Image: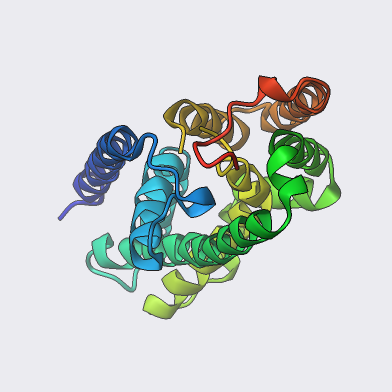
Length: 198
Length: 54
């Protein structure tokens, strides 16, 4: 398949997956309304991670699409693959893996916070102020040098896409993990903000 | 989970990552977060909390 057609196909698939994920999130938020159950919304680990994965596809695919298409182009230009489809999706999978691992940590964090809130009434009474404190931390984090460096790498990953090049799938895997880590470094605290919201 | 918050965050991430002045957008978001968090700390009702109170 010609690269242009392969990239169009990859782009279409990314957009369809993102749109389907938004549909699932909207449906899920309607059915889960008023369910309570604390920060994990009463979900078991498997369901939480599944919804988290859908959320990552919905929220991160739009801004990752230009990079994913750039990966497809680089894969073709370095010339070891006849078709760029599979190595490109290895990259996407590795990127999602980083976000899913973060989802697992978030689940444990949410469980611990919910449990702590049951023990310590002060937390329940001041829940909104604690939420405000996390918002404040997220605002301050935006101005730190860690955020600046991660965002710069996340915005312009061409350098490390070219440098962490491997000839086989392991190259795609390594690139996807790196890209995921820089984007996670940029945005992890913003995702923590989603927890306290109604 | 709040769909409006997710949409807002998605737009912010897209703007930071894909718009030319993305670093400026991040600073602007920092200012907005700090102002809003100050409001929430002073007036806790400004943050709609999830059903379980937390």
